[in-house]
Image 1 (cartoon, rainbow, N blue to C red):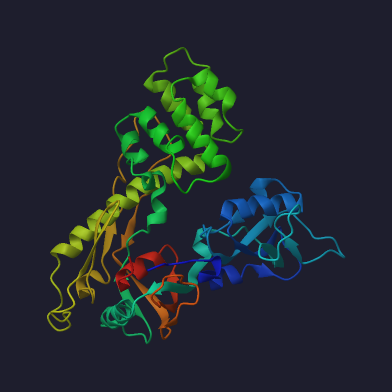
Image 2 (cartoon, rainbow, N blue to C red):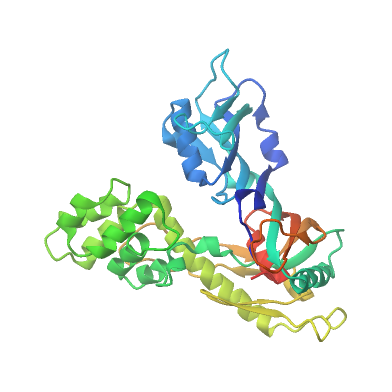
Length: 398
């Protein structure tokens, strides 16, 4: 099964809250509000392109959530202290050097404050699933019926609220979590996992940077001269200026020199994986509801991932539908590093997908296999901080 073959197979539209809508005004306000449509572009890159296009500093552009690079996505961004020319356009290409109708920003109006994560109500997804056999499609239908049991809203279903793989950053490389190394005070390992662990998905400057780092790790002066100029380079330049060989304290300062958002992602990855493991353990020990247990031929799905085993019972046991789990490591501190810190609070064990619809299966015209394959389209809305890739796994996609 293929989740996507082209960006149009994965479409995401960000939906904002009534509270945010109340902040909007058509003609005046310190923050210009743009609807940004992008494809094959990360959200931070789109924000950088927008800042350059409008001629503002990068920090003036704010967004509420990260959207998938390899998808067609639409989201709001705000730009502080920017006013359009009286006779200027309302739609701007995100790259002035490479105008592209796929990547644009359209001025919607103005707001009294910058957009924030709390302003995302949900995300609307349209996902094309390709390269299916008939048995896969039938499994999807069966799992959707089971996941809908006990939901009081029509066309809704309940599934485990695991963090998606895209949350796990450098751990994708199969070398472990940098956040785990930080907790042990092993700053060299944390730094290497963060900036010097190549991955097959690396492209462009990132690919050059990681491969140059790992090839010359330890040769700090030579490495500092050969690396491309990126914000990550500051860590290597700091090590090159240290007495040799660097100490763990030098590696600590080098890690602290990385962009702060990257440092936060490193902790989020480790914490999210640990939370997933805790939820899987809870689901494993919670018996199914006696009145709505899955039939004998529909046991809980168990999927082995790079980050542990995930369990997907259907339907979800009633006691877990409203239960929350505390985020791990909330009280943990990284030795001799004041920040970043692990997130605190709780996360719901389960989440609700609304307006769920699965199209009939049809011939997959993009599949090149000799044997005919099928494709179908899933449409749904998910709350902010829930992952459609997790829903697809709950349906049986792997």
